Length: 341
Image (cartoon, rainbow, N blue to C red):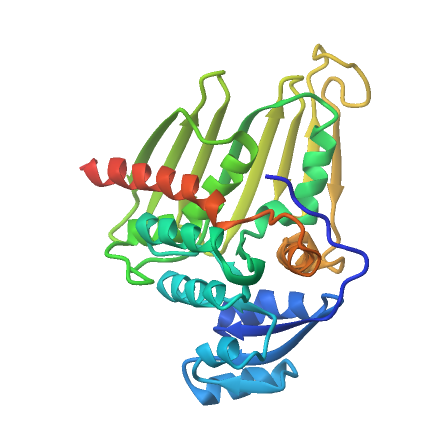
């Protein structure tokens, strides 16, 4: 999918937030605060106290414990929702019906059937409203630098993504198992990244490694008729979120991005197009931590792309419909993993 660059001139867009939890406070709200032409006007939470605290902290004018009023009272032009998949789906359905666009954190729905209904709603949304799924990783400035660099060195043939965390170690979001929770939490990210680059796969293979009673690793292999592959690893056995992505082109140029912060490019000496990256030489770039963290990790640039689509009626680069193939791959992964002893 094409990533839309943010517009240089943007009209003011009134945002409402549904779900001022840890993720929103640490990532989405700081990114939104730095977005030109965006203004947070209202916050909705499960309790008035939580909504009021977040509204004061982020200079929002209104707060409520009923998110529906943000839509029906005309207080906002767009919503950001960061809650559970079930609430995501409910907010998206209600907002699109009333012509309000939504930036919805992943996963946007608890299951494929619900997502299919939301896609139908998206196609017939009132007043051209859109639903933008907040996959931040492909919007990260460091990742986009990697893709630009590799774009000069042939077509992509393989992708490997490693994404592990310390959670979940118990079921969350209404899921029945830790495996299902892990697939919704990290699995949606890695499969989305692979499908954006490679498209829907011809084959899916998945294997689960049991580490202890609460922790596991899941390896996902996507295969394509022309020999391309994607190898994906997710797990809940780390003490923090770790992210590493490796891409290789048909000119044997390899790009590795580690933790959004370090980019390495290399190629063998006998590969086509001899030049700077010959032999055992590599090109490395490190982003200083002080430089635009929310742009580097993709939160600011994803929100900017959403804002640009809403204000200027440009194509949505992360629609609900694009998630259907992600969910279908994960359904197959879940089926295979559950059949393993």
